[in-house]
Each structure stands twice: as structure tokens, then as C-alpha cells.
Length: 555
Ligand code: LR7
Ligand code: MN
Image 1 (cartoon, helix red, strand yellow):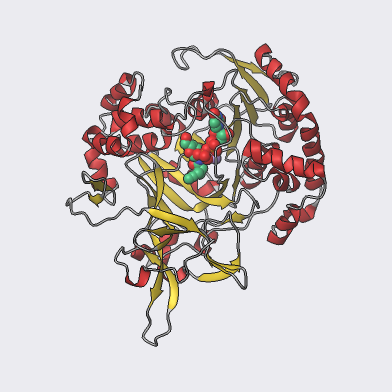
Image 2 (cartoon, rainbow, N blue to C red; image 1 turned 90 degrees about the horizontal axis):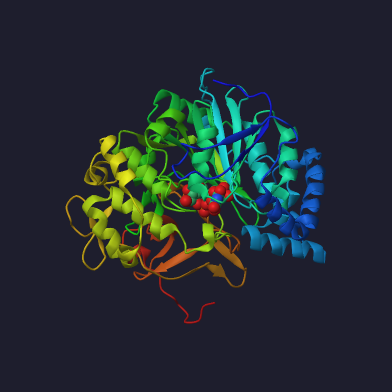
């Protein structure tokens, strides 16, 4: 394995028609070897006017915050203070951030790039020890027009919280960003930050899927770890992932994805859930069975998951390649997460969520960028490709859910069909029976039924409206501190926070108040006649989970 001693800036020239076969990598070991593409320089100058003053400002605040040790103290009240705007300049900065990134960049830019985050792991994780001979890793972070503070906080957190002996390199793939601060200023910053950072500049925007493939081809670590460009890795995040991948080369190891609030930048723990999907081929989180946590140890054991969210995972580099990486004809965003999940399960691999590894991710409410080439949202076309290669006869449920999909032009899929044959992958039926038996099949009305018996008992909720449950007089809202069914789902009153998903209730047709998929507000009757509202698995039978409006007007 080659260890890099100098930071490189790599410029990729030309996107070859046969992917990677003719990839030209110009590796400049020189400090001055930034970006040589004239096309991009034009873009840079076109945007420089607009973004110059903004990026100077960020530059100043980096220095300020990195030299303040108290910034290492994570404190929610401080975050609220950090959100205050006093001047017009600050208001403009915040509005600009909302528009460009769909998160509160003002708070982010005022927070240290090295801020501490709460250790969200289960207590049992903290006593675990890990082998000293774990494989070395290439961390790949693709970005397109990312904010300075969030991109670099991702990088800083990786450097700060990964044991140096396992961190072979960090590869940043710039998917032809246009923003000023991501040009030479970024190269300079990275140059002095760490010796083993490589910055790959793609001359034309490729979308996140191909950008990741470029990153993987430049990487030389035994294991690849992919991260989004607005993450913060938590304490000891890497060791559990590397342990899994080194013990089982065919396993994709996925961290628990904690939440960084896009408005407050609060770092919050996520509960343990599995990845699933609906027949529209949208990813969703599924809850674990109620009795899953009976044994304390289950809080730290790897969890088999039918699918993954997509952005954050570790995989053996050679195995990733042998398994066909990604479909390079998937554009911009979407679908690749289900594709790789189906493919790994069907073709001899597996997917596990590793509870002791935690990584925060900024969940934003909208994507702040368009598709490559300015066309339509790529999700549907990507999903059609995935469905046509992997779903076999079950594709009828996809078309039933997404009627527009039937007429979508999806290009040539023969390379992926051949890959499926070459890897001797199983039928999709096997996946549904053994990996995702919770999945429902649809009847002709689009309602769900049990995949095994065909009995329709699972029900697909339809939301009538959603919002907070607020006490008008106190102006406090019902909050679920932990989203775990049963005992730990304490409901409390707290300050109303419009952005918080732990406060947003969905009213279903069956008069339930559903917090997240399949968890409902339940009035449990107790023998002593005192009732407590709890969060329980939705049973769909009304009764303790049916809530009615006592007044007609609601706001
Ligand atoms: O054209 C682009 N080029 C890029 O390099 C568009 C995006 N990107 C980069 C972008 O800067 C970011 O770092 O790709 C990364 C992912 O893009 P996001 O953050 O806009 O995606 P997301 O977090 O909304 O979407 C999730 O689903 C995607 C489906 O294609 C990807 O798999 C994302 O990686 C994935 N993110 C996660 O899994 C984090 C947890 C979210 C959940 C649930
Ligand atoms: Mn993301």
C-alpha cells in the first residue's frame, strides 16, 4: 500500500466515454498545482464578485473560533445565542446561506470547526476495545457547492476522531463546484491542514454517484468510507466499522446516522432503526420489533438491514469494485442507495448497521441544487433503472405506485443486467422472503398486505395534516425525548421547535397521531386508572390510539 507524504491536488481532465478505462489523472505534487482548467477558472471569476466578501468573513470567523478553547464545549444555549442576528450584514449572510445550502450557515460559521459533539453511544460501547491491527481507510467525501464551515467541519472531525494509524487518506471530490470559497482558498487550506488529503477536481459536474466512483478509483486504502460533505463523526466512530469490514469482507458497515439540526446545528442522537423502502422505491426507516431490545446487548450488536440511506458507509475497496461499484448511468442524486443494497444482498454480500459507530449528518428539508445539466429530478429515472435490473416481477408494484415510471426513458441497462448474471445473483423474491419479510405487497387498490401469506393486515397510513401539539396557555409542545417504542418513549412538554421531527405529529385517517413511521401516541390505561400518554407501535385498531379534536379551530 502506498502511503502519501504530500497533499496532492488532482485535476481530472475529460470524462471518458468508457468509464475509467481512459481516465487521465494528473497528479500534481506541487504546492502551486491547483486547478488548471480554463473553463473552471471562468466559472470561478464569474462567481468571485458575489461570494468574495462572504468567504472573507468566513475566513475571519474560522480563525476566531479555532483559537477559542471554549468552543469545544458543546452547549445548546450557546447555539441559540449563536443564531442571533444584529446587523443587516448578518441577516443577508443568513438568508444567503438558507438559499444556497438549506441550513443555517450563520450558526455553522460561528461554531468551531473542531467543536465537540455529545457522545451518543450506548454505555456498553464505551467499554469495548478494538484490535490494533485494523485495516487502513480512505475516507471519501464528495461535495458540490458545500458551505465552507460544514465541509471543513466534516474533514476536521474525521482528522480529530480517527486513530491516525488507520487513517490512510482523506479524498475530497469536488464535483465541479462553482462557489468561490471552494476554489484555490480550499486547496490552500487543505494543504496546510493534513499531509494525507487529496483534492480531486472534476472538470464537469458528474452527480454524486459518479463522483464517488472517481473518489474510489483514486483511493488506495484497504477500506473505503464514504461520507456526505456535511457530517460530523463521533467518538470512536471508525474502529467499529473497520472491525466489521475486516472480519467480514463482504459486509457493508453502516454507522448510526445522528441528526444535526439544519436550523440550530444541535447534534442529536438517533434511535436504532433499520433501512427499508416503499414500492415507489423511496428509502424509509423501519422500526425494530418491539422485543428487539429485551437483551441489553442488542443495543450494541450489528443490525442486519435490508437497505441503507446511502451516504455513509464502509466497504472493502476491492470487494466494492468486484461487486460493480455503482451504476455509472445513475445521474445526480437518488436510487443508488437501494441499488447497492439490493445488489449486495442478492449477490453474496450483506449490510449491517453498527450501533457503536455514530456519525452526525445535516438533514435538510430540501435539496439546494438542481440536476446535472439542469434537467428534471433524476430520482425517477434512476429508480426505473434500478427497478428494471433488480425487481423481477415485483416491478409491477413499482409501476402501480409510480405510474409515470412506465414511460420513462431509462437508457441502456445491459451492463448492469450482465453484472447481475456474472455475479450469479439471487432472485428478488429471495430478498423479500429472507431479508425484508416485513415488506408488504400491494393489492390492486394499492393497499399493503403480508409478503408471505398475502393477507392484508399491514396498513399504509395516509396523513391528513401534520403539526405540533401545543398548549396555548403555556406555549409548550409535546416532545418525545426518545423515539423508541414502549418504555423509553417518554413524552414531555418543552419549547416548541418547528424544525424538530421529534415534535411533528401526523394525523392519520384512522385518527392516530403518528410521530415517525409506525409510532403512534397511545393512551395506555393502567390498573390504577391513571393514564399516561406513550409512544407505541401503531396498531391501527383505533381505541387507545384514536384522538379527536375537541374544538373545531386549529392553527
Ligand atoms: O451533484 C451532486 N454532486 C455531489 O457531489 C450532488 C450532491 N453531491 C454531494 C453532496 O455535496 C453531498 O456531500 O453528494 C453528497 C450527498 O448529497 P446530499 O447531501 O444532497 O444528499 P442527501 O443527504 O439528501 O441524500 C441521501 O441520499 C442520496 C441519494 O442519492 C445519497 O445517497 C446521499 O449520500 C444520502 N445521504 C445520506 O445517506 C445521509 C443520511 C440521510 C438519510 C436518510
Ligand atoms: Mn447529505
